[in-house]
Length: 142
Image (cartoon, rainbow, N blue to C red; front, side):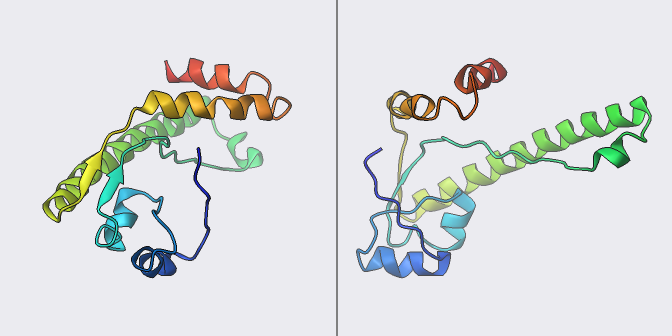
């Protein structure tokens, strides 16, 4: 994408931005705002390349002992909890963006299609990683 990632502890990001060591930071809006990174960095680009996913994990030995109706309940409530979590995150992000705008931050919504096109090469670079990964993901997003 043309950037040079510079991993660093979160506590070092604010001074690195103010000193020009880095040009930007990538984190969820809640982290950017909570760390006050909007003070030295007055632009936020909403690329929206990531959707938060929560995973419920459990051992097969336990889950295999549950009746079908209980497994169905776990799946159903897990999905509902995930959708609710996404809604809360969306509402929180909207509030944070308004707060940032009020503090002089310019919110940019770039052409996401250009990012998608640029990222497609990843699927060609790792063909053995997971066959048909791109198409599988696209099918699930429909």
